[in-house]
Image 1: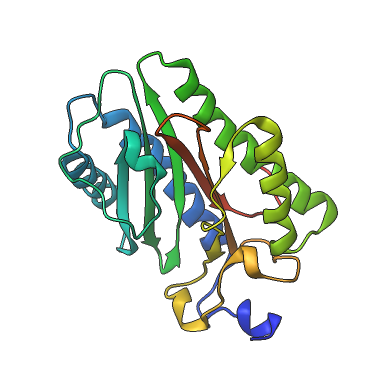
Image 2: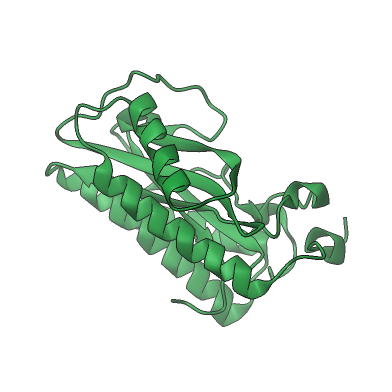
Length: 223
């Protein structure tokens, strides 16, 4: 597909609505995280996440809601996990949501730590740092999606983490973006347009069985 087709949007697309969907999704992730407690199962936490999204007024989800604890933070979106996996007192978890607000797709994911494990805290912080560095590079230098993920891999290695290069970001727009079959951000050979692509970062600890995840919409406004 050419770049125009891969960045196509529907007749109802609105950039302000897209940015509102982003803001609501980020707020929802924070609200969900505050309600998750040690002793919960992943299944219980996922149900809680859906309750929060419904209370906030989402229209529907465009991708299933994920909450993953401990070793399951290493797994990708479509990999099976243990629904009864329990969050420990010193543990790490991530949330990944894809709600639709006013006909526009939100997509937000973040990692959180309970307890006082310093390596888990460092891993969660590193996912944020890598996302910021890569998105800043996009704003500054106008790199292609392919180049952004090459840069992300270099920076992850320099910081002592392993980047999961099977997780390469994707399109978003007015629902449903899937009709455009735009492919992954990491395979896009041109500079991605603001407000249309989600940058995903998933990293793993080099020795221990856990990782961290962060995603957000690439936007010309760094706030």
